Amino acid sequence: MVEEAAYLAVWLIGLFGIVGAVCICVAKMVIHDSTAYDENYVWRRKLPPEAKGKR
Image (cartoon, rainbow, N blue to C red; front, side, top):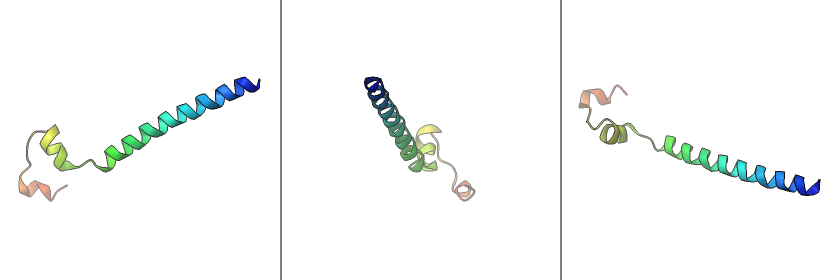
């Protein structure tokens, strides 16, 4: 019984570690996301200067 509880604890720690790492990576990506990056690499165009104030 104690051995099963230890296995469960190790698996849960590992699972929450993986989920936490993914959450941290997604948070960094969202924080550093910018419209300038999207214009250059996703849309592959530049918006006119008058459109920049409407964001």
